[in-house]
Image (cartoon, rainbow over all chains, first blue to last red; front, side):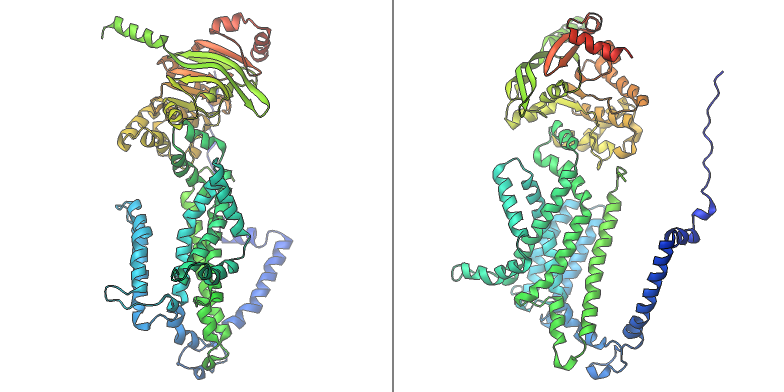
Amino acid sequence: MAIIFKPSPSLPPPVNSVGAVAWIKQNLLSSPLNVFLTLFSAYILYLLLPPMIQWGIIDATISGDTKSACTGGGACWTFIKVRFDQFMYGLYPPEEYWRVNLALVLLIINTGLFFVKSLNKMIVSLSIVLVYPIVAFTLFSGGIFGLEHVETSLWGGLFLTMLLGIIGIVASFPLGVLLALGRRSDMPIAKSVCVVFIETIRAVPLITIMFMASVMIPLFLPEGLNFNKLLRILIGITLFSAAYMAEVIRGGLQAIPKGQYEAADAMGLTYWQSMILVILPQALKLVIPGIVNTFIGLFKDTTLVYIVGMFDFLGIIQLANHDANWLGTTVEGYAFAGFVYWAFCFGMSRYSMAIERKLETGHKRN
Amino acid sequence: MTEHNMALAQLEQGEKTIIEFNDVNKWYGDFHVLKNINFSVKSGERIVVCGPSGSGKSTMTRCINRLEEHQKGEIIVDGITMNDNLKNIEAIRKDVGMVFQHFNLFPHLTILENLTLAPIWVRKTPKKEAEEIAMHYLERVKIANQAAKFPGQLSGGQQQRVAIARGLCMKPRIMLFDEPTSALDPEMIKEVLDVMVQLAEEGMTMICVTHEMGFAKTVADRVVFMDAGEIVEANEPHEFFNNPQHDRTQNFLSQILNH
């Protein structure tokens, strides 16, 4: 008679392998080197943190309206407080700030619609990509519906930084996808156009492209035919990051096994169907870290518009630093700029990690 | 329709040639991988293709739905001549299902979405109907309870059965199998072969590249043996296994059957 096999019951793990003590043991004190590194880091923190807290919080001043209010010896946050509106909106007329705020609220609402289950995602995307930009531009620029016209040269501060960053990101992504597909295409002309474009753009520094956009292009265009400098800069930034984006995405496309392309082909899917439904969703997911890397780079690179005379967030802070009434507040300005850039970029990086986790479908090869 | 008429209709269908290879040649660079392949398959026929690795058996099979391009000769599938015309290729691919050695399920889609993708986008079947068809075939391969899972959560044998169901969802006239059990653990080969045997019994035209000689013996109408890019011999299974004509075939059979 055969013996019946019965699997042994699963037991819980030993107590000292879970919990806070185990975590400290495992992560901070697992080896002599690790113990040393833990102690060393603690010492560095001990050296750095107390003075920073002393300067930034305990001795800091935020009351008052002038430099003379800052007497504590610490940070003079009064400077940031007084100049806050300018840092946010640049030289945009203060009585029109509501237009920028309204556009931001509309953007948040429109993005929020993605999370409303009953709405078609396609319609929400179209409204963000097609309808929203027109509404936002009308609000920013004015000139119709009784809104006062505001020159783009007055747009500035965090408003300009976000404008450049968001439009750059939204426009360079699809362009990058097309360039990546083009570079891997079998069609010789499409392929060479993409290769030449990508390699040329990548071989040139962003500053050069900005100078081209702001100074050179108007020289080449015939008299009377000229378009807005902000738009030229935007196109420059978009093309620049699209080239980088294309290479990141090409990496993803190459990582998809040949069998996926073959299975899609064998089903009778057309080229675009197989790309959009089968290949790109997988390839883009693989390169989310690289894509977000490019986005973060682009967001920070927008500070270079300072060079061509536009006052983005960092630019306007630098300008304020030169104010004779506020001499000696450079550190506060840069600390504030650093914190805001950090918050945006850290947010993007966290968000990308959340997306990666959400898209995980259990086929990850560790 | 009377029983007699039905039998006649089946007979007629059985007479109809559905795949035809005329002097097909193919090269990979300088390497002559298919040499003068002449071969035809009738509707409802079950063909098993075997041979040593590198003999061109996979390549020949993949020429049928243009995953590989032939350079000389003529391939006619279901009355459509294979050429560079994308319309022809798409028309053929609609009617030819394929099952791969490594399953090639789409890992970002659920099992159900894997099955409905082609019917929805290629056949333009409404989503609801496509899902009903998909569930029907998932039940046939005995895996309907896994419909909401992702391929990465299934075992190899389950994935391959899903892949077969995915092919069937397009209601193809021909099914191609490219070594469907070669990447499976021994425990899982049988569950896949069972599905294939069932399919064969229902009269599907099948071309199957495999080393499962038991399957060939029980199911195949003809066994095709290839070596060095040529069809060495093709015969019905009983004759093929018991009375191989060529010494190359005898040699191959003795290699795989005696151990």
